[in-house]
Amino acid sequence: MYKISIITLLISTLLISGCNSFKKNKPSSVNKEEMASKVIDEFKHAWNGYKKYAWGHDALNPLSGGFHDWYKESLLMTPVDAFSTMCTMGLEEEKKEAKEIIFSKLSFDKDMYVQHFEISIRLLGGLLSAYQMDGDERFLKLAEDLATRMLPVWSSPTGLPYRYVNLKTGAVRDSISNPAELGTYVLEYATLSSITKKPIFKEKAEKALLYLSEKRSSIDLIGSSININTGEWVDKMSHIRGGIDSYLEYLIKYYLFTGDKKYKVLWDKHKQALDKYAAQTVESGLWYSVVDMNTGERKATVYGALDAFYPGTLCLGGDLEQAKKLQESNFKLWTLHGVEPEAIDYTTMQIPEGNSFYILRPENIESAFYLYRFTKDEKYLKMGVEYYESLKKYCRTDIAYAHIKDVATKEKEDVMESFFLAETLSYLYLIFAPEEKFSFETHVFNTEAHPLKKLN
Ligand code: DMJ
Image (cartoon, rainbow, N blue to C red; front, side, top):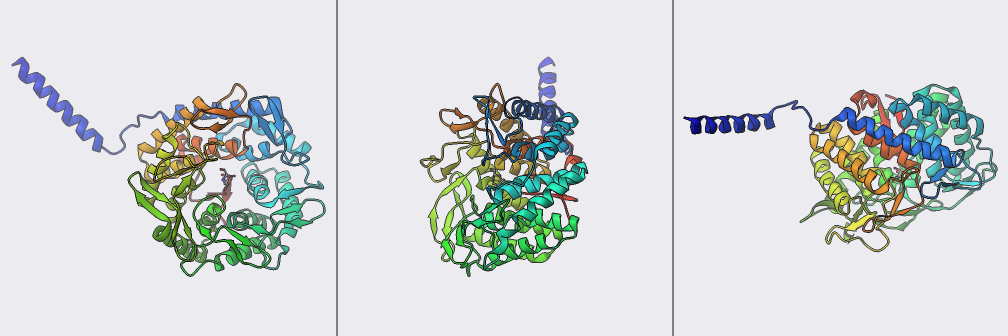
């Protein structure tokens, strides 16, 4: 009798737990509220480090307690880049501090060459998003001044932008560039044009993006380096890696941003070509390789921290199945050594020489955020917890967060990129945060994770 009731109890427990695993809306084993607040604490820790040791400079040195600037004078890279995350996280005190330094110190009237791409995605994108999120007109004034000073970059014979511009004299330089640095402007410049009612910014950025897409090969792939004066490809290797990544990202995002179908058509062409020639499934899963833009012939089997943005972009483009598979590979890349190396050869899972660093990049986490929002599968929350724990374990210092020189030894490096606050912690927070913190209906992220309001 006793035996029978124990067996009945066991069977019914098994049945109940079996049923539960199929139940919809099962309570999550991850405490999202607690995780979101833990991420905020880490943001505050890093911001406090910046405030204490690097106030007024571009970036903090998180081991020595020093600072560094990108150019001869600071452009307040960290406070501007971090501001949209403060808005998303609802950090009023920190917003006040950032505004104080930005409005008292930031000026673009400086006789120095700056890199148009980095300044556009971090500062222009940051200021425009700050204006939209906070409403202070001074952000807009700074953004317009910056974009106007950078207008000479668009003066090449092809309309593709020069890489560097002097903010005071308007002199430009460097005519060999890559698709990411040529085609990642439409979101920022169209936002500025729409607010200021000055179409010039949008026109220049759209013209460059479309010119570049016209340079694709007969099999719909683009190369990785081009001469902007002649429009001739200098390097014909095609991939989704750094140098091409955000060109692809902005095609689908600009379609979502404007509703203009020609950008979706272009995205679809590239996406299908990349599926056909670059995607490769091996024992360890799905990856993307490096191929020749004209023949599609495979040239290298490397995949890394920058490629990891692609599942998120695939979600936006509508191929959820491919996104899910690639995110599995992203997570393998992350867990191989506890934090991801810059790149691996996915056929051997070994790190090619010179690629063993991790510089607090966001892309792996960014893709997990998209996948969680598009599927609601708890596995992406669990990935989020793992990212959080490994970042804390390997990259946290008493002062802030640091790059890792070598993911095998976990030796740290005295740098904290501003995108750690703009992107890495923002996407990590958004994995756990209430959905209304970011709406896909009304906004897209620029490539530096600054939310921008859709135009359509
Ligand atoms: C960021 O500056 C941007 O996301 C850019 O598009 C490429 N990646 C870095 C961070 O890794």
